[in-house]
Length: 250
Image (cartoon, rainbow, N blue to C red; front, side, top):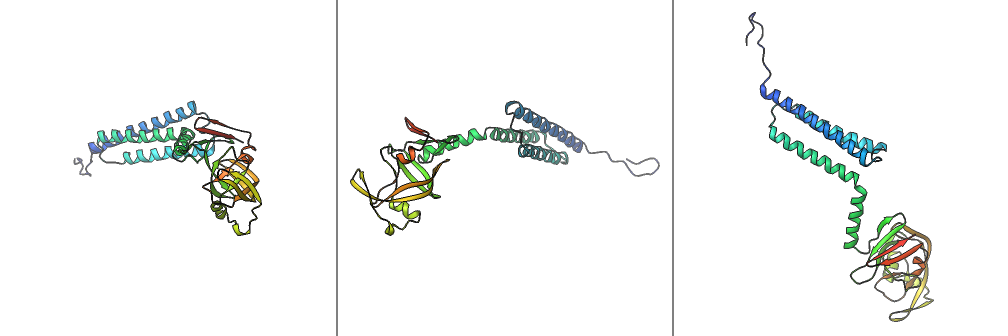
C-alpha cells in the first residue's frame, strides 16, 4: 500500500506468521505450566528431591531445555497446530517419564537388581546397608560372587563347611604359585579325605560385606567351586534361609 506522500509502502505482518507466534506463545505457556506442575509434584511428594545443589541445577537445566524448545517454536514462521499439539504432548510425556524415573530411581534400581539376581543367582542383592540376599540356583544351592584380593571368585555357600576354601583354578587367578604350597591340612569331603594348604587373603567381600585378613585353604585336588563356609558366615551378625533366599547381615 502506497502512502499519499509517496513514502515507502507499509507491509502488514503475514497472517500465518502472526498465527505461528500466537501458537508459540501458547506452547511456551504450556511448557511453563508443566514445569510448575513438576516442581509442585517433587516438593509435595518428594520433599528432599531438590535439596542438593546438583538436583536444583538438573531441574534448571531441564527448564532451560524447555525454554529453548519453545523459543524455536516462537521463531517458526508457519506452524501446523495439530502437529504442534502432538509435539507438545510428546515432550510433556518425556518430561513426565524423566521426572518419575528420577523420583523412583532407587526403586527402579532395586527392581533391576532383583531381576538381574534371578537371571544370575550368584549376584548378591543389596537390600539394606550391610545386608545382602542370595537367590538359590537351579542346582538347589546358594552361590555368591565375591572379591578375593580384588579378584572375582564364585563361591558355593556351604553351612556344613568349617572354613573357606579356594579351588586350584581360583587360586591361580589370584596369582598363587601352587607349586610352592605346603598341603598340610586334611579335611573330609564328599569324595573322602582332601588336602589343602593354608593361605591368607588381605580382603574378602561379598557385595558390601567385607572382612580383612581372612584365612583360607587352597585345595590340592581339583574341585568344581570354591567354598564359603562358617569361618565367613560365623563372622556375620546373622544369616538365615527362607525359601529360595539366603539373607546375610554384617
